[in-house]
Length: 237
Image 1 (tube, rainbow, N blue to C red):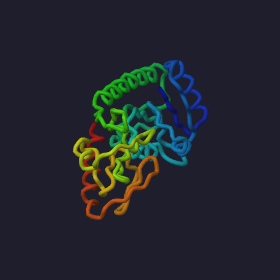
Image 2: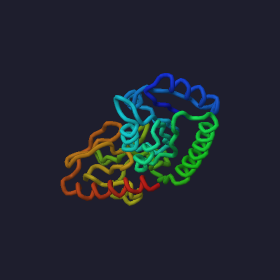
Image 3: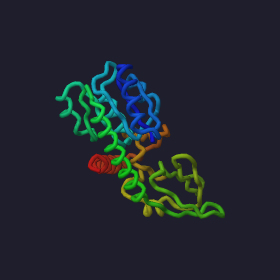
Image 4: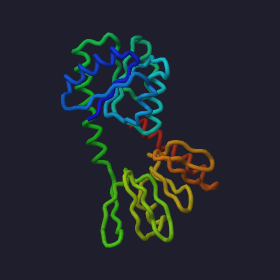
């Protein structure tokens, strides 16, 4: 389990880090003194304690970037101003800690966050959908939640997975019938998982792994509708 603390005051970072390590001795606890440092680290923590008021980038902005990248784990805001609580409902914060934070309050929130994280992980695992394909002599079970996109090349389907590529002979239309509504056939040669979309315009989609994929002109409206529906489902979950 990775727990991250982001606060522009080094003293606050040190205090929270020491206390959280005491509550969660088996967790890895890291700290950042700016929002940009957190984002540039590429870290996607399981639990994030995030200060709202920071000079380079506000906690609200940092959280929005993470949520836009598909991060759906536990967000706990830290603030010195109680009225800030009402500005962050759209970011699906798990809790708000108002400075100064009492040890027992911090412990209770962290313990509840860990319990919620276990529920999220359990739900995610149980809801994963798998398909079976034959690649050469091997039958392979594919977890669709780890499929970024599928590509047709030389009569083969290339499955671009989270950590590897898998090739097999088949048709993209047949694969499209097997996947769920989080995927969209944006081009005759590409089927994309909305989960991994980082940005898009009318001509292309860029995924979280930086691959850039063309959108057929006639498919743009359909892609946009599918992506908006996907985003609403994720925010409601």
